[in-house]
Image 1: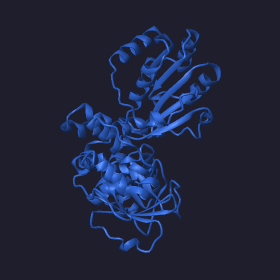
Image 2: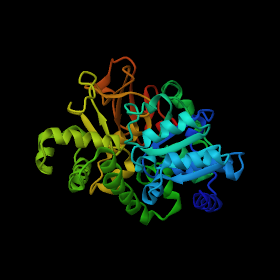
Image 3: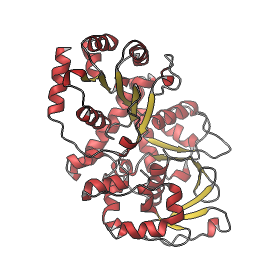
Length: 396
C-alpha cells in the first residue's frame, strides 16, 4: 500500500492539466461506482487525475492505481481495496481496468463490502451490460468521445464556446453560425481539426509526430485491448490491421463483404466478427439500414473509420466525401441514432433525413421530403434547410 501511495503522490505532483472536458458536466459524482469508458488517447486518465486533484479529501484518503501495474505485480485488486478501506480510504481510482483479469468480480465485491467511492476507466470495447457479476446494475457508465470541434477551438484559442443540441442547430443554424463566426473564422481551424484535432495529445507534441503517435495508439488498441477483451489469438492481429487498411482505402458506399473476406483470407462470419471487434474498440463506425438492424452477422450498409484523424493517419489518399460523412457521424453518433438511408445519406433519430456534400450540394435527392436537410462543407453560414457542416462540431 505504501508503494502504491508513493507512486500516486509522484504522479499527482507532476499533473497540471486544467482544461475540463465536456463529460465533467455529465458525470453524477454522487454515485458510488463510476466507469469512464472510451478510446485510448481521449483523456480518460486526465479526467481521473483531475477529479483526484480537485477532491477535498486528504491525500491518504484517496488512491490512484493502474490495473496493468496490479496485474504485473501479481497483487489482488480486492485485497488492495480492503487494505485501503481499513486505513480510512474514501476514494479509489482504477485506471485501465480491462487489463485486470476478472475485474467485474472484484469491482462487485468492492462495491458490496466497502464504503469506497470507486472510479474506473476502461477500453471502449468493454461490455459490462452482460457481465457475469451483474456489474451493470451497480456501475454508472459514461462512454466518452475525443475532442469535439468546439473543445478543440477552446484549447486552441483559449476561449469558451457554447454547446448546442441537434434540434437547436437545425432550427436556428443561421443565427448560431453568425454569432460563432463573429468570434473566429471556422475554416481557419476546421481542416486542422479534421486532420489532427480529435485526440487531446495533439496539443502535447508536434504535428510531425502526431500521426506516428496515433498509429501507435491504434496498434496498441488492436494488439492489446481487443486481443485481451475478445481473446483473439495474437497471430490474427495482422488480419484486424489489414481490415482497417482496406476500409480506409475503400469508399463507404462500395462495401463488398465477399471481396473483403477474400483479400484478408478469412470467411464471411469471421469477417463479421472482426468488424464487430473493431466497432467495439471504436476504430470503426458502422451504419445499418433501419430494416436490417445491427445483428453482428447482418451486413453493414457502410463502414467508416471512427474519426477523421484516423483517415489522415491510415489512408494513402483522402476522399473528401468520406471525411465529411465521417465527421458528421462522429460528432452525432454518441448522442443520436444514425441509420443508413436510401433517400439522402443518413436517417437521424428515425425522423430527420440528411444529405452531406460540398457548398454546391443541391436538394435534388431529398426534395419534397419532410424534415430533410443538406449539411454542406465550405460554407460559413447556411440558409433555409442548408446547414454548415462545421456547426455540428458544437454538439458537445
